[in-house]
Amino acid sequence: MIPLSEKEILGRLRFDNPWWQTSKIEKRFEQRLRRSYFIIFQELISKKDINRAIVLMGPRRVGKTVMVNHSISKLIASGVATTNILYVPLETPIYTGLSLEKIVTLFSKMHEHTRETPLYVFFDEIQYLKDWKIHLKSLVDSFPSYQFVATGSAAAALRLKSLESGAGKFTDFLLPPLTFHEYLTFTEQKDSLIEVTENEHGNSYSTNNIDKLNECFIDYLNFGGYPEAVFSETVKQDISRFMKSDIIDNVILRDLPNLYGINDIQELNKLFTVIAYNTGQEVSLEELSQGTGISKNTLKRYIEYLKAAFLIKIVFRINQSAKKFKRATHFKVYLTNPSMRAALFGPVNDNSEAIAALIESAVYSQWFHSNSINNLYYSRWKNDEVDIVYLTPNKQKPAWCVEVKWTDLPYNDNQNLKSLSTFLSVNNLNQAALVTTKTITGHKIIDGCSVYFSPSSLYAYTLGANIQGSKHHRKFIS
Image (cartoon, rainbow, N blue to C red; front, side):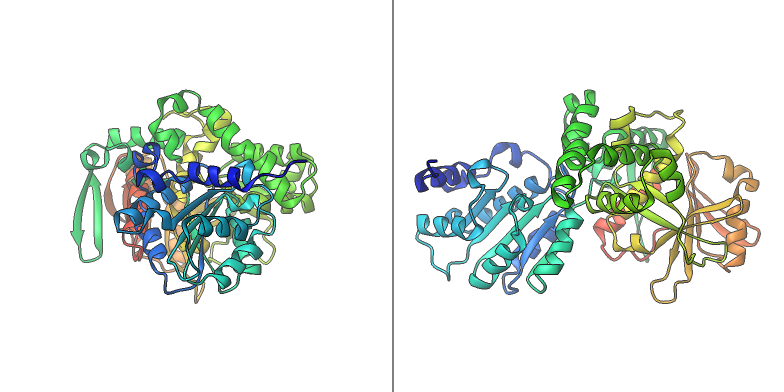
């Protein structure tokens, strides 16, 4: 067997780093809009006084490689020498079997860098390298003047391994799917549909065309989670091939089996299909086991794997008094991006049977961009339910709640809100409730409790705008 020559490796490095010759990133990256997370990510890269590698995590196709290229462009614009920047896509076959240190050494030798030269090194899709965390930690220790950035698709799995083997040496940065706020920004509809009012609590948002905003929201449900789908009519016309084949199948049939040694891939695929169809619905391990034929112990593992790949989020149940159950036998499963359901079962419209569950999934998906997601629950007792309840981290007491609807009936008929009224009364929450509607914005006193009403589409936009814009998300329901 003839080994790869150093000349061939260097040639590929030159190909993957065109700015060494042109001082620019590729046009296909330059033309893409920047994610809202870019500013925070770039500030993190610029802090070279902290000797830590940055691990950019997120699902497939959310724009990690694009954001890395935007960062490279920003570094060049700020005066960093182009030859001080290295980008290595590790899924490229020529890098297979090469250690990270070998690649960095070849790069340094090529441009006559020393250990003290302030370099920026980006490793894309680092999960393709076995024991990557050990190699990356070694580089951080050996080259304190270099800034190392790694990306990976199996986000939670990457995080787990970084915590295990890189304690104190890695900084995790999560890039989730697009929020509805980003979707409207990317499609250049935000300014024409959203009006912003500044007040003492921050910004509040309204719309001058709720019908058009709802139309955009349904498009977001079907296509809006991934930048590539937003910009390409070709992808929209064949969303099943793009999202199912390029994202879902790659994760379920390749990434997760390789990471966790799963033998029965079809079992995992079957479970995800059932979960996707029932997004936003309450399920139990017993029901899932009966519906899929998979044992409960195996189901528990598979659910953890799907969570690790950021395909699903589990939300647990509390009772009428906001108390957790000792045995969590029932829970809700949400797709982290409702567009995945459209890829599997076809796009939805305003009258689809699944529209209410997808609206609820879309609202929850905005919260995936905030650490507060871990404090959200749903309350269910007898035949009554409240969709979202926030428990304070310290006292585990309910602070506010949200009932998600895709209809205006609750505003006109308070009998539709008996479950919410009961929950508010039992927990003394007389000033902290929101009900989403289809088109109505308003405020009422119901059974002595103050209840705000806002369209689901506008609430989803508000969540995304506040979480990404202010990053202090003090209040979301007024």
